[in-house]
Amino acid sequence: MRKTDNLIGESEAFLTVLDQTSRLAPLDRPILIIGERGTGKELIAQRLHYLSRRWDQPLVSLNCAALSEGVIDSELFGHEAGSFTGAKGRHQGRFERAENGSLFLDELATAPMGVQEKLLRVIEYGEYERVGGSKTCQANVRLICATNENLPQLAAEGKFRSDLLDRLAFDIIHLPPLRERQEDILPLAEYYAVKMCRELNFSFFAGFSQQAQQQLQTYPWPGNIRELKNVTERSVFRHSLENEPVNTIIFDPFTPPWQQEKDNESSNKNHTEPSSSTQELATSNGNGNGNGMWELPIDFRQWQQDQEVAILQQALEQAQYNQRKAADLLSLSYHQLRGLLRKYQLVGND
Ligand SMILES: Nc1ncnc2c1ncn2[C@@H]1O[C@H](COP(=O)(O)OP(=O)(O)OP(=O)(O)O)[C@@H](O)[C@H]1O
Ligand SMILES: [Mg+2]
Image 1 (cartoon, protein in one colour):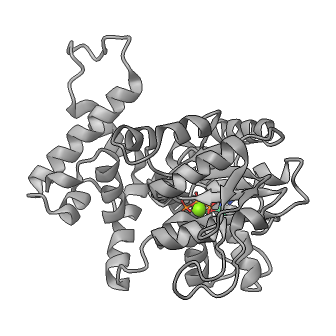
Image 2 (cartoon, protein in one colour):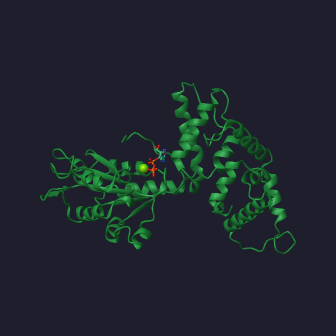
Image 3 (spheres, protein in one colour):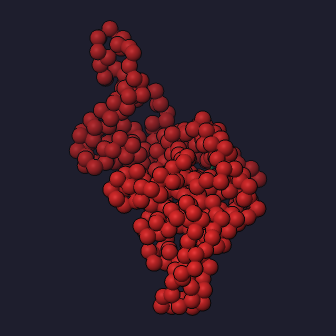
């Protein structure tokens, strides 16, 4: 783990998280970080460690999803010589290696029940046994856990220990997905673009064109910051014209180039007439009383979403559920349409 990674973001939601992280860091309590994939859980875990009093002690991490049930136990708690087939000599567990420091457990929801039970005991009493050993070991380790699962639901279904969840839930850091922090999209994209330009030995980064900025901002970013980083780097790399702004955002490298061009053309169309579609939306959907007025108050966001869902459904029907045709009808790129369908969970209906 590097501690030099910069955290970019000035949105309210992100600043709140940073603030919460700083406040929690010095407390010697287990912390749970919840967030979708690619939202920066690992970076926040690092921040918790480096802002704590344990900053000059080890930060050790383990991804619970990467290991099978038997292995995870001995990886965490170590094992004694000959405790199972193939185990030669004593093996130091991550708890031992993290002594006096922090242990970051990623994808905690996948930890087997037996391991969860041992974790609870370490948190409560600072005690555990190595696999195949009977001696009780002492641990002075701060646990930082991360997940993108709904742990209370898993607990209700008996798939996660409720007592461990209670113990971890002293305070929870919820990392907002990128779509909840729109303002951070362009700063992040620029940050990664500049880095990529440096890597390519460009003398400067010429920026994103209007069209590119719009594409970045309307995309729903299911893979969050990790996806944004990859998309930005790829787009800058493919662009290769040092002096001109990046105009084409390549969201999906698996789309063949001929399709990419078509997608771009349609989103170009969308950009040159940005207001016409919104205009149409407003006029084609009645406003209730026929005199050009709405009955207020309304829930604006809900109204906006309803409009979007309605027109998406109409376009899908009209295109006989061919999503590329539906995208064309709305002057959206295929990916923009897919993003919206996912956002409103209309994908399953086709
Ligand atoms: N605020 C941020 N500023 C700059 N880069 C960020 C920020 N948040 C995350 N990143 C970058 O995004 C990528 C994903 O972050 P990270 O690995 O911490 O996410 P994660 O939530 O652990 O994802 P996963 O659930 O897939 O493991 C990393 O390259 C990280 O450096
Ligand atoms: Mg991670």
